[in-house]
Amino acid sequence: MYSSGFHGATDLSPVTMAAALHFNTAIHNFGIQEHMPHDPLVDEVFPHDYHFKDGFMYVGDKPGLGVDLDIDLASKYPYQRAFLPVNRREDGTMWNW
Image (cartoon, rainbow, N blue to C red; front, side, top):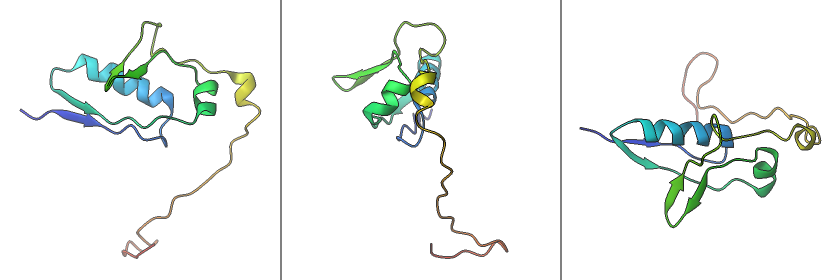
């Protein structure tokens, strides 16, 4: 049987990491969780109960996913739309971006 591994890069929010951790604990064939620490400011905007210690991720005991949102702090950083390059043109052909 295959085990699962989940993406945990910093382009995903702490909400996504918490959801992945909760899912990990609910399945029998969980394999590995990628973890890249967020910028401290992201952790301040999204205070969370999960944590990494000695090579292990811990879900925490707060209700729900265990992630909150500091709306006052978040409002100081308005959304700025950004795009990643894509490797297909509008007609579907591949190109080297």
